[in-house]
Figure 1 (cartoon, rainbow, N blue to C red):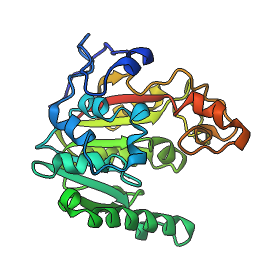
Figure 2 (figure 1 turned 180 degrees about the horizontal axis):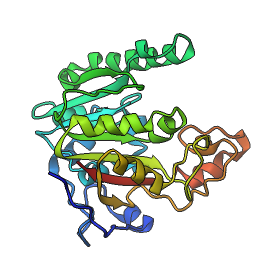
Figure 3 (figure 1 turned 120 degrees about the horizontal axis):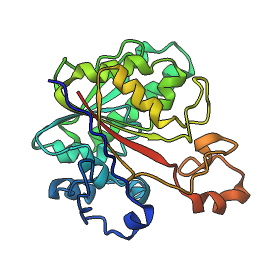
Length: 283
């Protein structure tokens, strides 16, 4: 069954979001409005098992609002693509532990050519598995699956309710892997399943070889639609109008990477993390 595309997008001002308490639901204002934050999602965000340094980034990443917008809730099978150090895994794995399934899809090191790239992917996977093993009360039911980025398969076809990717699309574009990745998302999702994308947002379309880390929002929508998805909603929950997107080291100039001169620390701290699109697609 194909889902219909909705034309109205919900926009939220940064000032409104900053004034709202973390557990406060944003009142609906249209078909793409931010839904109420469920008690289960808020409890997972407030969970004591989260790393304190990760919690500090909630002001920029808005996890409760973002997961609610994507329709994540207990009972669903959720696949997170390339979870890195497990920032969202700290929320998703406990949220889905007793009811549902959390799958961390990581690059299979064996699918990467020998060298620094393979070593990095191996360290990344080892670090995530070590994190899960160290706290079985939270992560004993979390699954880690490896995929080949050149021919990605994230699980049995039609097995997932939600696929999530946070700030990864620019990497796939630069490696000429984006088309295959989006097709893989489409294949693993059930009919009516949701693809949630958060990505650094460029001012406009960028070239395929762009190294800034930003991607045009229209470009991401086009990639998803080419794979068969329909845009079902967009949110400004992760927007940052202070981000001018013209830095010497691209998006990595900003927090949390902070690739800048020491004397510029306060300047970039005042800007904060990047301006991000938040898009919900439906199969």
